[in-house]
Image 1 (tube, one colour):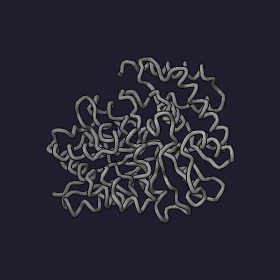
Image 2: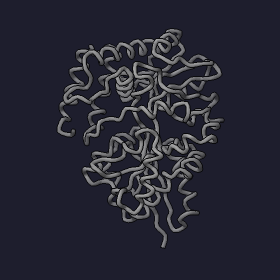
Image 3: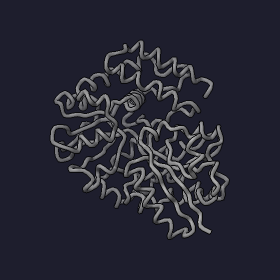
Length: 377
């Protein structure tokens, strides 16, 4: 008797094409298992309640900050101790930076890193022979009107964390404090200068919109902070290819970029838990990640695919060119209400970049948000 597994992912070639093509290939591995994928918007990917999704789906592509809440509420099946511990140990060894560990919580593994990303930089190699490698160089190029930067609230929030961490202070590591006054002021000084130099519409753009604009025309040639999408580095995806590189260096070099990416989890409500877990481990494996998953537009989470000559040759060295940034990325706090906190605080950063809040006002409100989640530490 055949088993049908339902999965939910996000609506982009990277999010949907990768898993849908892999599901078709899986029929050769497990002929009695059919995996059918639905897709949701990128915003819903971050916002839609997991309690709703686990009732309807066996497999979920999720953002790692959801893990603490899901684990504590019993929404996902635990993957360690499920009969795949040897595979789990191998995947831990094949992690890109902290990607694999970001799906663990309270001693258990609740997801597998099938997609790895962080804020990186991108440029048009046909327009810019070499990108700037530090923030003075970025701001000089921005002053020439050639730079784009998405600072829609969640991206502005991410950029503030990235810049502060690069300067030496990780956000939300001290109880009740988002960032110290000096760290916030220094980071906002850099980001305000950048915001004033890029087009006003960047305040409403996400990384996909920015990459689309950067890959068109000849006016803009560089973006210093945006989540990487290897699709834009591949032949034929857009009119012009983008090359992705490490973030601009700060005091800590290219360390501190906010870790993103996505992972696959299994609903604890699934009627086919064993089959769903088996598919998740297969999808995260090096062979699949380097093969059908990448070929269908995916951005692998497995380091074997990041080291692969073929995937790098096909993507203008996307993986090797950003690997140092991924290895030194900042992992967001492991709080069960972190997503709520991020959603509440992100608009404040964009408002401050528009000079609607002073640094003191911004810091007070960010700190208040952190204090409100102290119980989740």
